[in-house]
Length: 110
Length: 113
Image (cartoon, rainbow over all chains, first blue to last red; front, top):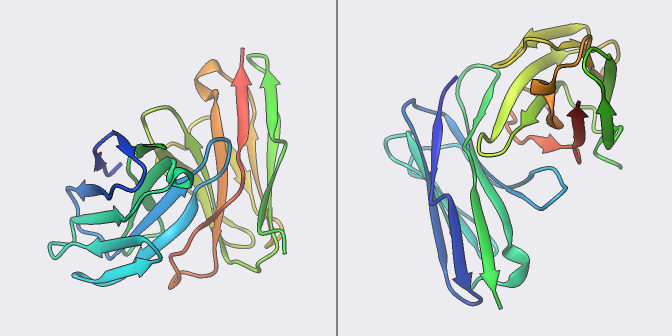
């Protein structure tokens, strides 16, 4: 299957700091999605991106669809304790399948 | 509106036993998916369905079967469980092909001893 590489694998930050993470692929995608997963729960969709170069915000979260269509970025501004969790990227192309990254684990230290 | 629900939430099986995981959605979504999540490997697609009565293989289909007899339900079966199938299983759905917003269920944690 297609591999999506997420970095960093884990992050430990102070409350109030900004966070940046990215996702890269060897293949082109037409859609990029970002999810957050809390312990013991299913992933929850945060942001969907449908066009190369697109920049979309959802509250303190901002995500970008890379120009090459092989990468995407997620930024979280002014982190708070409830931002703790695992963040996943996912890519979708013209087929029926979604391909997920391995996740970035975020820990926010109060 | 419950969204996507999964039954059961936890299960322990012995090697060779069979079981069925049930996924139900009340959003009238066309597409449904079964994933497994293992540590360090993200989510991997097992099988999916683009509509009632249709199913297709995903990335890791071996050892699993599925059925979509009703639009709102998607069943995942393990005929003869193996320890390698110990995982957390997630069901997801999307409205239709042009909408790529997947909604996930809470997961089923399966342990095969």
